[in-house]
Length: 103
Image 1 (cartoon, rainbow, N blue to C red):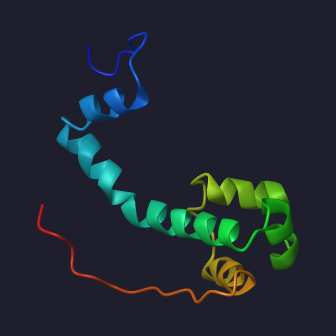
Image 2 (image 1 turned 180 degrees about the horizontal axis):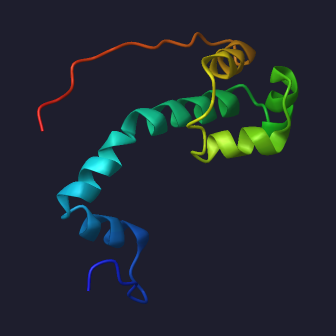
């Protein structure tokens, strides 16, 4: 019963089960760059001692927009927005191309 919820099963257990499916595993790992960027933004914001609201104000947006970005719903975030966030956190945005790892 693939994808069936089992009461008492943790999210990690569910994800580990799903990782046995090659399509799921590929889709999961395809998101690694986005989640790496997301994690670095959150860590930098917290290190700077800023709330989402404070950072949002610094970059000229509202807290809910920044919250959406931090919860992984940023596929439509522009490079300009990412640069504004980096600047507000006194960071430099670095984008680079790397060779894909062999599957």
